[in-house]
Image: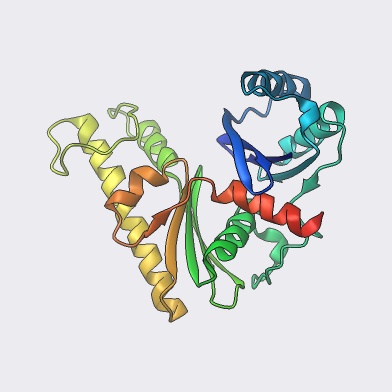
Length: 254
């Protein structure tokens, strides 16, 4: 079985594949202070609950946008799974031309999403990934990664509002009952939620206009299912796009 690990700034998402089938998946909070031993204890518990053992894993691939944790995940693969993982980065075969000024600057998660999106849909795409930052990536009809945009994520936006406006409270990310809100909490939620829907639709529409084609817009990431129903541009949510991309990249590199 294949272990795929996606290390993000807020969450670490892991999956177990048997062939092309995602057997199990888990989401952990990203904590840079944890050691490989501590993460291994967490993984051992998750594997045990799923009736799996470390010995059942025969290969691993890692995507990370948190450099201090890349080595931690590699150490887990070496010390506990007794294998050398693939790490998404320079030198790995993607099968996708990267049309970026400096291809090394593109986040591993953006490349993984682009590879998975094009492999699944075989058409021009805008991929919106709702993470700590929200990324917008454009893949053209020929399957070339052409670039995109990066915006502050929903959680960052709400946290900044709380920290910089003295009288405003910290609130949860949620769709408010009305856009014309009747209290401070709902007013903040309305501004951030519907403002973010407008941001997403505005950026996707501008990418479509600049690309001069009609790319399909798909979304992934923790908050995709919250925003997508209100969006007029997002056509599909794929919760496991990044994990599937890691599986595809493993197949291309093994």
